Length: 286
Image 1 (cartoon, one colour):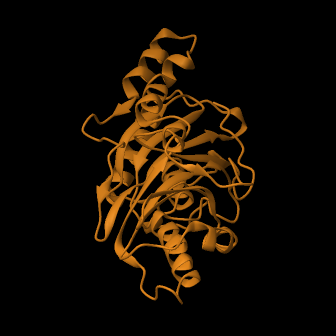
Image 2 (cartoon, rainbow, N blue to C red; image 1 turned 180 degrees about the horizontal axis):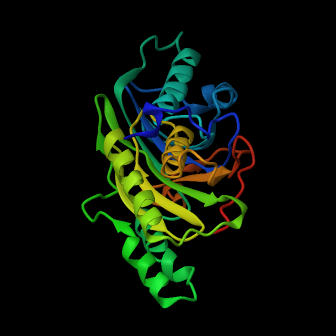
């Protein structure tokens, strides 16, 4: 049973610190040829910043197709990113083109590593954090989760566009506590699997070690990274009767079929904002 059916969540946006690195490639499509970016780019950067969406680069793919590389805060879902960029740009060019854009869009998550590299990294967590007892180490090896049918490099087709919301989530036990009990570890793995099934998240991997957990999953277009991470944290706490088993912090990052370097090869950098984010994002320590 899901944790929120009975009790209030322990981990919330108000009390949990989220470290993050969230980048997205967004393409929007005009009904007609769009004005030159020199007309609107500076104002658009300022306007979307209010929404927690920072424009890192823009590429004019054709007269009516714009591709943006953006950085966001963890409260922004892919659908909100689309709404921010498209809606605010429409407002800026409303006098010349009152109804500039088609309804369709393409947004996909990207990161420092692509899905293949990150999958290998999470798959190797048990070996990266070996335990002295060979029997316990073998237990952890057996408890790793991988669904080969889930491909987090491929976008999903939604109502009005294609999207990819692939997330890496890392949570850590509190007070350097190590869990080695097989029954509890199995329950933690199972509750993550069931939570993803209930939420219709595409779960690819669980990297389970004694003091922290890595999860790779694909969420929906309307789901913000922070809300996904908090949901998983509270589900893990449910295994321990809603005790504060995890630190009040987590890491969430985006990834996809291409890393940021591959995306940037085809884009024109926006002057003055190269590589910046709406606010500093601590890197994952693992």
